[in-house]
Image (cartoon, rainbow, N blue to C red; front, side, top):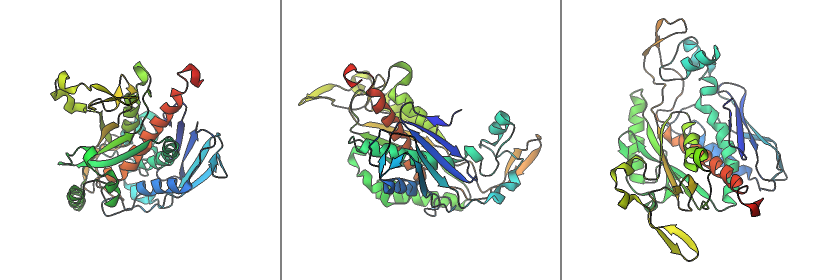
Length: 361
């Protein structure tokens, strides 16, 4: 019912924003993989709330508890269960909207679908659910690391501030050295100032997270409906607040002619490569071995610290007042979520690729 993702490397998440805990069950992780709990904790720390003045001030340490599927530091091949307990819920912050629909939230749609809704932070619709995805994605990243595949996401736009540099000219590791996770220090400072000014205005702002996947082998992806870029798009569009996805040349590619856009093939040693990479590492829905790169657009966070006109469950006109602890801009904390979802997709297709050739079966 929409709570699972993946075919062979599969996660199922559960839990609500103000419930007892969140959790994830990871199925399909090959047995014998060394599971470094410290690396999972690092990913959780990158996503957790309360990191800085430009993120929500909810204080959650997001400590993990591995319940199953790991023995003596290695995966057993059975389902891996991980729980993240909630510790800093302030449900009283939401009693004023118990019967009111917040603009651009999932309150109304959940009410129409289920006839009941958890108004405490949005319940299941809350971005807090992504903590479970990051835990599952951290396992997928370790699987990919063992195969030499790396995934790096970073912020390239906040509002009108856009980093127009090619990712190949940047030191992507610099992204972790500032609050906004932009690999360009000068642009990062401007972005931080903009987010802070928006926060002081009691408002929110959107942005773009870019991602690069390196060393993906050629041949990952399925024809027609399960194309690799289609699954990446689904993964990204499933993240809260995402409004757009583009890969390779994306929308900018429409400005080019085919003669300039086509990626010519060359041979380097025993490997076939392309001179350019407008395809974004994917052709015909299947990876070609080049870098896979894409952009993910996030809207401004829907909860603003201002009064807004809305309706309640009885259809009456009401005023919704912004209260609670919320991100003025979601993109800094969205970086590890984008990486996690990308890792889950690539891990899944790596396993699927082993069923396509007779010699692999």
